[in-house]
Length: 378
Image (cartoon, one colour):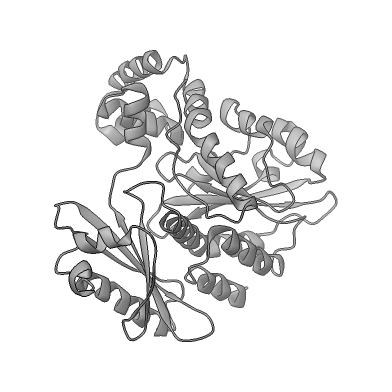
């Protein structure tokens, strides 16, 4: 397990695209935690805990019935409930008191595929953001997932989260959707530029003290992050660690730089990803689609994550009555009658299109993207 944990941490900093990262990690996990078929990987939007992509070799496209049940019904074992839990791991047997047949999801979406046990683990970063969930399954009459196996999955979860976040950033930088997409550059260990993704020149020009277009001079902030990443690669006690910096740009906005060594054969290289430190993408989407106020957007985001009225009131420092007033306005603007309807509407309008697009992109060998898709709200 220690060797496998170190291997996963190393994979997280290799700059792999997301399907490649999932595939490599699946092979490592299978040698430590035996399971049925291959793991079922999901990425989640950390702001809303709604799914943005799915990857499983035996099931390249999730049935729409599963997504409708996950986001329109209540059951014992959901992605969001595990993502929100303090432990960040749960089994279907544990959630149902040892009788998984009590769960409709087990009866309709696990048992018919030959499975019996389900272990869900949240991919929570060390900073607390949840970037995904992985599901492992076992056939009937197999030993239950034990404490050591669950402990191992929890131990590797931060590395899996880091690899997922980096895979999404690499995907968005490699195939940008718009001018705000991240940019990626790869440097050799003697500070020569090995490669650039489309659009990264804009971010390099916006960073202080750089003159990329004029002289090819890299900004000091890029070199600092790259140097820190290379030093981390040499530290035995920091596998999977990533250099990070937040810089105020020339245009007066905050940019985030991520640096990670690219481990593999050949000369050492380091990847630096530059992205705007924008707020959660779900917030402007809710404003544009439904004309929600800033406070209504905050309430909606917490509803999507599964927070109760009391939890929302505590998070926003308002009374439960004020939360209820906001919910009434939100329901009217979005045309729904309940929290569950609100979750379903937002998911199927903005997250299912992203998931379907990502499923198609995986089959075509294209990068996977994160965050909601600005689809029509109706």
